[in-house]
Image 1 (tube, rainbow, N blue to C red):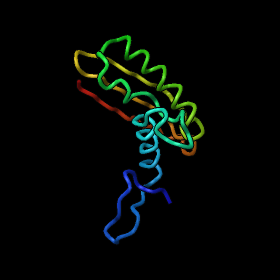
Image 2 (image 1 turned 180 degrees about the horizontal axis):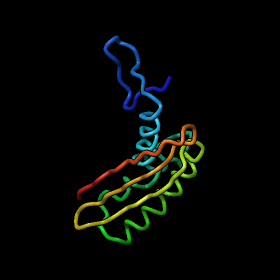
Image 3 (image 1 turned 90 degrees about the horizontal axis):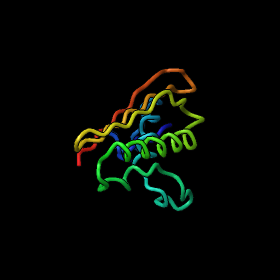
Length: 118
């Protein structure tokens, strides 16, 4: 059983479950939105995305973030997904992140897109 993220209860009062595709997307979101040092037993888990929330938006920051996120995804989820493409683009006050991956278990390709406006 894959527990739904964020944790919640279903209409029967039980722990809500997620299907496999949703669970993998949830794991990617958790990795991207966790700061290093936030998890006690895994102090280097995370991507560094939230540390840059108030940083000036620039192509250099997008390139640095792309590099750190690629490493985090390969390190922590490399056994679950095959990272096919990762694009971080900076345009005015908007930062867009697009992660394209294939699930290793099924080979199914998915895309996760996150947009942040500062």
